[in-house]
Image 1 (cartoon, rainbow, N blue to C red):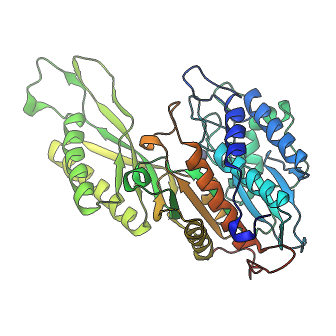
Image 2 (image 1 turned 180 degrees about the vertical axis):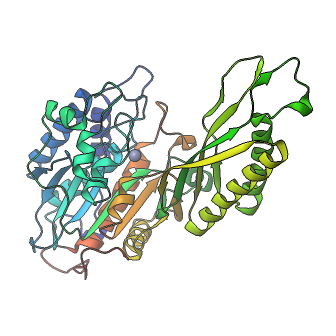
Length: 433
Ligand SMILES: [Zn+2]
């Protein structure tokens, strides 16, 4: 029997479970369609539950459908180390965004079980409800209610484009549980996830030690001019908001790519001119703005740039402008203890690793409000995700699960009969570092 330092997960078994999960809601192009609280989500939950029960884990489901599969600790009254991610997908999503974290966590628990290793604190495998936000906005809903960022009642009354509420959908699939949502301490939350970006692959690293999640701000920028005929109206006589927008965008790209390089991100995903007529100078143009940066102070500066450039371009063109805030998510710095556990685990297993920031939102953003939190990234081919072509190799999945295993052991205090390989951690629950 392997000693704790030599302990490794069964990568073949993990891969078979990933493939079996990918058959639920499988699409012709090789991806998955498994929207939150749909029939496909129900089948994925049923399958996860059956696996967890077969491992002897105790299942609890809370009032927003978050699922927890618990393996007792030797000191079972202490708060658990939670290993979690999500089983829902985008409408044309990939097979690994989410399920990798849930099924690798299950594999970690099964490995501990098979090798007779007890942990001081309990370990729970979590499947968070509606991480993607594709059917019900906002994203990361289950972890958001759990951590107190969202109100349960607000989340339950959220409806999808067909008018079906979260409450109705959750009851229809039978996953509204009796456990109160949140309100309990976690020793730590760890999440294994695909990177969804190209950096690890480019650097030839097997493991990303995620140090935090960049902040995001969403706005609607509206520029207002005057409608006019495209033919008879001479250029100097126009108040064309698109001309002002063009000037502002050129300056904004230039500044973000110089003053905020390499971390700043600037995206205008939706552009709409009205009245949207080929031979009318638009009276108004509205663009969505998405800015991101790992530091909130830099985001303040980027927002300031946005206002400055909109104001100056509009002043020059005689147009007016308005900036409406839509959403903001502050930058997150993960717990030093979790970051160190992931780093040490990667080194212990002999994987090439590097620190990096997460570019996208994850349930771990919300758990970091209430518990020491960390994330592990593995590369995905070409950095592609939210795409049916999303791909990783069995070896990449296995490496991530091994790091999850050893990071969890460090945080949960694993031991077996004989020498103690990882001392019980001096985990102080709650309050991330
Ligand atoms: Zn995800």
